[in-house]
Length: 286
Image (cartoon, rainbow, N blue to C red):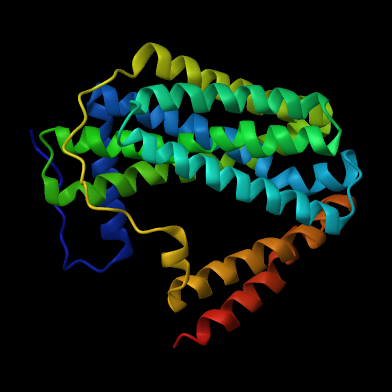
């Protein structure tokens, strides 16, 4: 099998794009990875359908104040991270990746059907923190499954990072078109149509995995103990990145709400305060 080689000494962006494109073509030639690429795009579309409009949904449809919306999203994130971390560890010891992908994709469909019709904050917390927390596992498991398939294939092991970058590009591509389609859906069908659209994408992901993704004997997974989250966050460099990203995301919410309220005018301005603060925090590292 002919595979694209990695030219480490070629710094030109065009050269990198050529390498990524060659890696994508190689991935498409393999049936199982072709299916996973499609699953990756569907998952990215499902996430991109909802994420840009959550602040608008929370403050206008659910009638939460900005402060309460911040608390709601923080508690959702904490519960989601806890559940996905716990289940991710189980994927290395107990459950197959296919089983967890089926559970997480079905949870995504169920959770967003609930979001389409529920407006009680405490019920939305259960849906968002617990059910969609399980759904968040799909991203990591899909990439882990793809990596195992690449490592099991005849592709050179030293080029695994290149092929995984190509796999990430497929996910990023869905984010370039998903929010635009979602905006038209929201305008035409309100939040009910938006969330049912996301649920349909997760349901499509479930059926793709059910019919086309097969269980494999696990490759030799490292038994080295993974670092705990609190041990990672006490590192100064990681903590600064974490704080910067949190501030940027948090500062987007009120500005994004005002932009949506004025017909999506000045939408790009919503990220400016967060980017500025992120730059200041990260510059202190240097």
